[in-house]
Amino acid sequence: MRSSTAKKSYSLSTKETTRIAGYTTLNFATAYHFGPKQAFSANFEVLNITNQLYGYETSIYEPGRRFNLKLTARY
Image (tube, rainbow, N blue to C red; front, side, top):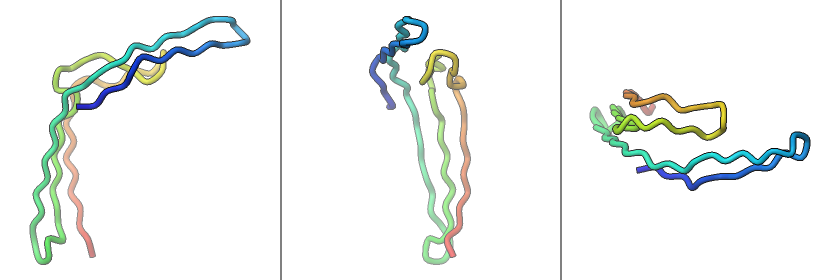
């Protein structure tokens, strides 16, 4: 899970108060390490499983449900 509380900001120039709602998203992540000395890994994530609309700023919203696959190698 990832959460953030509601935020308020006040602009002196426009004299407006802006409120951004809090949110909680449900996420899942797993990793598999393999190869000699566990040098390789495959990571899989499902983020925002419930497809909730939320944002960090008033005009920038995060994408809905998404999937990430990351492959890494240490040398």
